[in-house]
Amino acid sequence: MSHDPITLRGWDQDHVWHPFTAMQAYRTEDAPIIESAEGFHLTDVVGRTYLDGISSLWCNVHGHRVPEIDAAIREQIDKVSHSTLLGLSSRVSIELARELAKLAPPGLTKVFYSDSGATAVEVALKMAWQYHTQKLMMPSERRLFATVGNAYHGDTVGAVSVGSIPVFHKVYGKLLFETVSVPSPVALRLPEGFSDRESYLKWCFDEVERVIREQHEQLAAFIIEPLVQGAAGILVHPHGYLRHVRRLTRQYNVPLIADEVAVGFGRTGTMLACEQEAVSPDFLCLAKGITGGYLPLAATMTTEAIYNAFLDEPAAGKTFFHGHTYTGNPLGCAAALASLQLFAKNNVVANARRNADRLADRLSVLKDHPHVAEVRQKGIMIGIELVADRESLTPFTAERRTGHLVTLAARRRGVMIRPLGDVVVLMPAPGMPGDLVNQLCETALESIDEATRG
Ligand SMILES: *Cc1c(COP(=O)(O)O)cnc(C)c1O
Image (tube, helix red, strand yellow):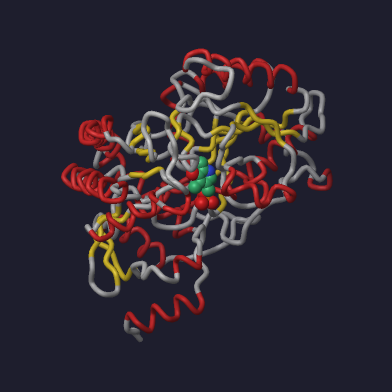
């Protein structure tokens, strides 16, 4: 049965509570209701078509309705849609684990499946904690997690605890466990006491050393978004920072959790971000792009050394007591296997790199824009920070909702984007053709002009 758009709008208002959405404003906005998609375009129930400029929230890779992925899922449906991994296995979950072990940095051979980025992070946090209590050499209770300022690792309570984006996380402060954090190594606005970028960044590097040196005996793990802090506004770390963190965590025996949920699968111009600094973490969290952006599947990968600490007689209680009903869902695994094949067949990472150059070129005009503080870019991840005044970096008032105005202006031009506050985010899919990336840039430029005027 198919319902008319007006009925659907009413039911949306009556029943659907949208994530990360200010519902009072949403109810007045008539946001598109998506009905279908084709390639890199989404179509709504009144037949309007939009370019998907944010990869359906940072996860789509090869476009929508990709014949090879659709076929792989259909074939899997004809075999089995879901069976459990609790004490049982399944063909596609094994085959995918093998492929993930091949593409991960050296040493990450073990794959623990779950359903989302947040669960991939929860798994890493719980494993790290339990690992220390069970490791053979000097077992210990290490309660403290080290994080980077303004981190985002997902929305479950453990993942929120290791996050620190004020607007998202402050509300839940009293609910969270304790962490220690190092400053985010980005220098658009210098804190008091610093006169130049270089000295501030040097201090950020030094703080990593100090925190790890002083607290390493309490640290269960250090968690980081490699190269780019996505949800904080596409904050790009200086080259060498990830390596620096890895060197110190190794030196002081603190496990490193690399949360590649956003940056993985081609977004930064390499398959995984860790590759760019030749870093092997102790835990690797993968989600968003793992299925090509099709189905909720995630993986937490780890090393033999960590895994071995969970081996003993069942009665010893060293089991990892964690699992979700749909852990390693076969449809998700089948989609992920098909997606990985397409990466190779279509040379998707090379395409993403070409698009990165194109984005840099097309957006370079913004460097003189009176309302653009800076354009941040790593690969095909773009954050354009809008300000009321470029010289003083004075923000627009929150009431003005300038980032949101850009979204609405882009929507009128047939392009779907979603900002982070007043940071306009462009996140084309790694497989997007160049002409569509051009269109995305042109629309973004026009929409920024329109939304910042007056
Ligand atoms: C999106 C994101 C998550 C959370 O993933 P979900 O699938 O939304 O739970 C975790 N970490 C990072 C870095 C992310 O960008």
